[in-house]
Length: 220
Image (cartoon, rainbow, N blue to C red; front, side, top):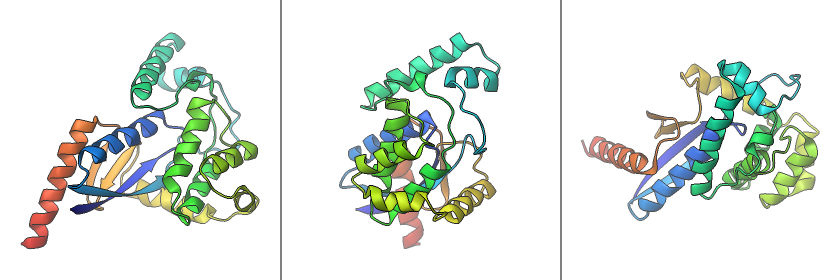
């Protein structure tokens, strides 16, 4: 069985990032016994200003993209349908507000020390899209920590310090310098880029082709 490293550049506040990972999971399930994916999450901030006042998401998206709120609600409804079919909880995604996710990214880095990075990321997705909670709020973050099966007391110490701040900033800078300007982005074996939340069938074919090319390169 071949093993591929899969670096996922994403934001907690990005619905397509949650959808993209769920689709990747389906693809890897299809490839079970053939290809194994070693996933690592990397930070990206859609709203990097920590002093930005929260704004209702539909209004914020309407302003950002120059489209009507009705159009944005329709686009959000479509994402909810896609997410629900994948087993994701997007029940209250239209009720959320914009949020800075820097502290959430710090907790994802911390969770990696315990092998719980994906669980932490998914708990934050659930809090934001499933419950419309403010994922820049300390209490919400600690709830997500507990949901991910991690120690809330230790996480609180992380949040009360600047631990992992430099790591998150360096992570963001690295991938931006590599040309990543939109998320989700999946970088396979450090060389192959898959942009966006591609369908599982596409991912199965892409991962097979990458594994084949790498196997041929290794034997050349």
